Length: 186
Image 1 (cartoon, rainbow, N blue to C red):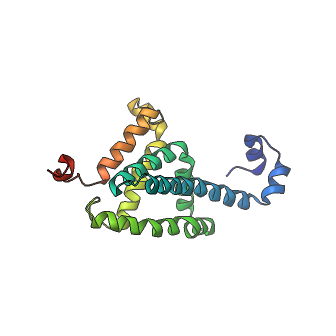
Image 2 (tube, helix red, strand yellow):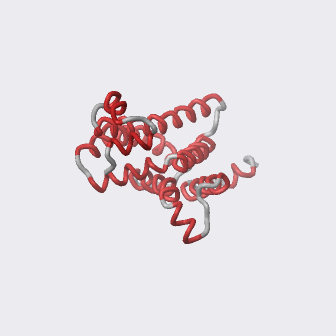
Image 3 (cartoon, one colour):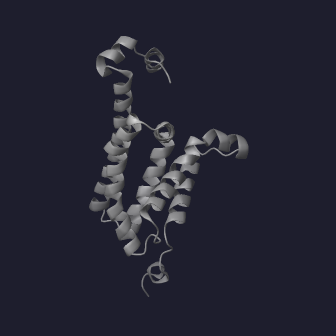
């Protein structure tokens, strides 16, 4: 609902510079969303490189993914806010965002999910339930950080809380490691 002049003021630039570089307010919004998803995808690509380089097990890689994703959500609560607002509003912009970024990302993640269920790392559940459980657990505490601070005197944005929350999300999502693996296969 902000106008371009207010956005320019908050960004420390001028209305004319925003118009010059982005054209319309809608084009500025689209570039903002594109940038948001590029940051998320860069985090995932970096994690994939680390997994290949360090030869992480699927369990270790998933733990690192959850930690990275929760940290991303803590650093970028606007991602969830924009998505929620557009989902409530609906319409062409929301459809563009889902078709351009959300659906391809979900399709990409489904193969990994199916493999993790097949190997017993994750419990068997519908893929949409997995996605939205993970997204909700990872994003919502940071969207509602002020509420948690006021209601529970808990700072979800502290580094310790972010790490503890990532560990909690991981523990909720995965099946326990088989006893043989924990003992080292005795």
